[in-house]
Amino acid sequence: MIMQEKEAPVSGNFYEFDEEYRNTLATVDAEGKRVWLYPKKPNGSLYTGRTLASIILLALLFSGPLVHIQGRPFFLFNFFERKFILFGQMFWPQDFFLLALTLITFFVFVILFTVAFGRIWCGWACPQTLFMEMVFRRIEYWIEGDANNQRRLDRLPWDSGKIFKKSAKHIVFLLISILIAHTCMAYLIGVDEVLKIVSQSPAKHWGGFLGLTTFTLIFYGVFAHFREQACVVVCPYGRLQSVLLVKDSIVVMYDWLRGEPRGRLKKEQKTETKGDCIDCKLCVHVCPTGIDIRHGTQLECVNCTACIDACDDVMTKIHKPKGLIRYSSHSAIKEGKQKLFTPRIAGYIVVLSALIIVLCYLVFTRQDIEMTVLKVPGTLYSRTDDGQITNMYNIEFVNKTFDEVPLELKIEVPASASLLRVGGPDIIVPKEGILKGLYMIKMPPGEVRSMKMTVDLGVYQQGKKIISTKARFIGPLGNQQGGSETEKKDNH
Ligand code: SF4
Ligand code: SF4
Image (cartoon, rainbow, N blue to C red):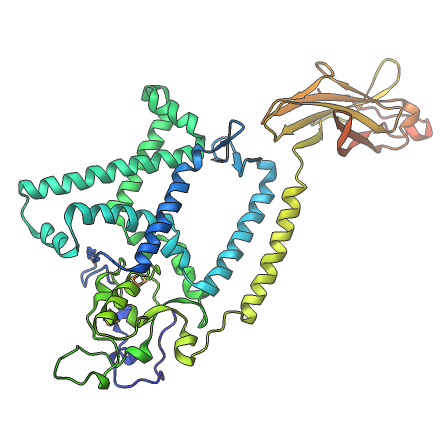
């Protein structure tokens, strides 16, 4: 955490020396029990901006599984069948290295972004914040009223009015949780499968039905009860913040030079003797994680900007310039200069650029058809009646496209070798599927010049070679001298 330093050029104010807040959590009381937060409804230009951004992002999120291109989903993360579609492109477990590299690239991007712009993601784009602050919290304000009304309602005995409001709120919460659960499931198994599950008896789809129920309960539990604890206690990104942020990172910041010494605004008092902060605590009351941003950047701050809006409103009312709390950095406030392009950022940009280049190269040169050649386990070679040496292979073709692909497999070198597929010569790899086959490579004995040879294979699609590979061919010991052979029998 970056804190205002003790030598900050302000004096005699409590926050320079009182670091007691570090020993407590705003959401836990002295006995270790959860303190329920009642954040005041934010209002202001940033809140309006976040509302618009969340409408767009939520629309994209909910429509994602519905988007199909040529009958195929645009996104699918089917972990159960190990099938992944990203931007209409199919990825298989064979492409796992691409997934790993994508994750590493994403991780470096997150580091770079966080070092430069702090937790903008949390406040503006994280699904947890979007749903919590822009959907569930708004419904709560709509049904139960603003923070004070909610507090009052919770203290009231359970009369009909309270029962009505609480039930209405939780029924709406549950319905939205059901919608989110179905959307998540559609990303995992596809929207058609989800429609099947919801339109048929649960007995026919026990797995899917249990999955949807579990998702619904998790989302309901998180947004109705767990709430800010997901960001404060569970989210690893919040923890990363303390090691990633530097003094030049742009985060939601309180301008302590301008604000301190803080003090209540009294008519008889000359405000010039004080800083601009009138200690109204509105920035604390609107905070969804219950912290006081005036202590400095803290792990719990999700950069939601509610405190900026609240403080700007106060500043307008007391005829002071806006921006006492604003997007800024520790250096910008303390030294008056903002450095965005630092050596650390430059280093991250270089690493990120290199990763993106490698990733793009691998993605664009990725083959739609893959082939694996393995000798049948436990076999060496055998000899046919006419004296030819044979080896057996398991050959597997993976078709990553959405169409059936007819292929031709040929031996390129040595030309005298021949190939035979057990079960017929035709190779038609099903769409999004795998074709396995048992193959025999036959070689005239005169061609077998060593115990271990390689055979060059070529895979052709519509007459065009798409894959070249090699297969190991084992011959008899001593065949090259025409001497005695130690022939092994195949086990197959
Ligand atoms: S809202 Fe602004 S003026 Fe009020 S306590 Fe917070 S920082 Fe001070
Ligand atoms: S301190 Fe401000 S920006 Fe941070 S979570 Fe609280 S209200 Fe949001």
